[in-house]
Image (cartoon, rainbow, N blue to C red; front, side, top):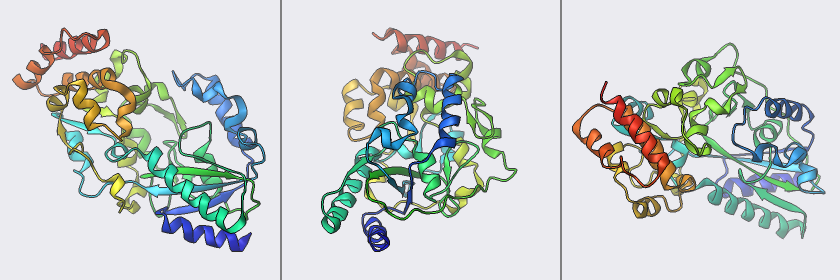
Length: 346
């Protein structure tokens, strides 16, 4: 098993994974935290968080026969992208979370995990496995922590001493009794930069996130009207939010991804809000093909941009763009356009 593990490490590196580790399936402590969090209702509309019961925290229930989880990490920061802070400061531009500037990570990582499983199968013969990339009830951060890939920071993202937090996680559940790695230790110390910077104060305590307040949740997972109290704090963030990562001291060790899949596409790293708001639905579908952004749909996209335009400078181009959609066929879009126009009358 140790010889096989050494080979798996080599194959993973060849496939572009930046770190790999092995854990067992015992997540008792993490299960207690999850159940308490769900009971508090902080998951908001993310019903899938509790739909599968304990399968999320008991891997052998999700895939019977699982005894080990191979956790992998892959860096995603795109090269040559506009500085995130500069984009956030220019409220005429749209801020899109850095992870969504390239190709959809689900497909990119799943293909590589499948290739890794095929390499293992070539050596050991048929074995039980299943690949996951943020696509099933899996406590990926807890598993990655147990596998030594990093620790869960106060913002609830996984942090690594040598790579910060700008990376994706994936898992290969397996019935192979591979040797396990040592869990990572926490290194947040007394730092609370992520808590202090959060625009909506969604990190209500260290290691405790109220998703209902989180801009990533509001712009992606939340399908209805955005609560008025959170519209101003959203600023120009139209898909996701990276503030807690941008101020984290550990991200001075983050790495730029060499993978073409994660390079910025269609200059969405620093694009005008007005330009995006003028996209037709056909434009939206064309420019978000193969992107994680596609999943929110056109109406939600316009809803988010309308809020950002309400926070943009009061210049003719902004107001004219909003007026052009004040009779939009979507009730959701019209409501947010009216709110935005009111901001420019003050």
